[in-house]
Length: 254
Image (cartoon, rainbow, N blue to C red; front, side):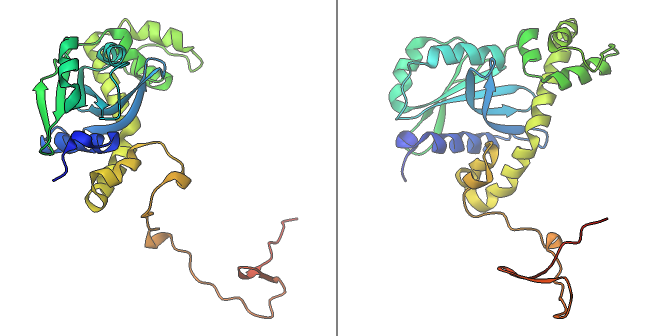
C-alpha cells in the first residue's frame, strides 16, 4: 500500500473526508465544504465540516511549508469552533513545537492512515465571528425571526449591530444553519457521486467550478429531460436545411 506520507493535498483532503465519514461525524444534517473562505476572504479552509459545530481542517502535504501556519491557526481558531491540522509526518515535530493551544493534529502515517495526535478543543466563538459567517439576507431572516423590525434596504452594518444584541447561542445556531443551507446542494452532489467515483474522484463537486473545468465522467442527462423526436414534412414551407439537419424557420409574432 502507498502511504499517505507522500500524497498530494487533494488526496489528503479525501482522506480527511473518509475519516469523518467513517467516524459517523457526517449525519443527515451535516454538510462537507471544500475551500471555505473567512475573514473577508483572506483565508481559505481546506475542508470544513458543519454538523453540531463548525470544524476546519488545514492540510499540510509533503509539498507544503509551515510558514503561514501560525497565522492560519490564529484565524481559523477565530472563525471555527474546532480546528485541526492534517500534516505529513515530517512536519509533526515542528507543529508540536509551535504549541498551538486548542488545535488538533492528525498525522499521515506510512501505513495509509490518519492518526490523531492531539484532539481539538471545542470553543465558543465571539458574536462578531458568528455574525461574519452569515450573509446580509441570512442576518435579515434571523432578525425577523426574533421579532426585530428589519427594513429591506437596511445596510449590513445596521443588521450586524442588531444581531450583536442576540444571545451568542442563538447566533451560533444561526451561523451553523446558514453555512449548512448555503453549501448543502454541493454536499448532496458530492454524496451522490462518491460511491461511483470514490471520494477523491468526487471532490470536484464540492468546489465552485465552471462546466469546462468539470472532469469526466460527465453526468448523464435524465431520461425525462430528453426532447421528443418530431418529423418534418418535406413540403413544409418553413423547412430549412441547417448544417445539423432539417429544422423549421422561426416565425416572428406580429
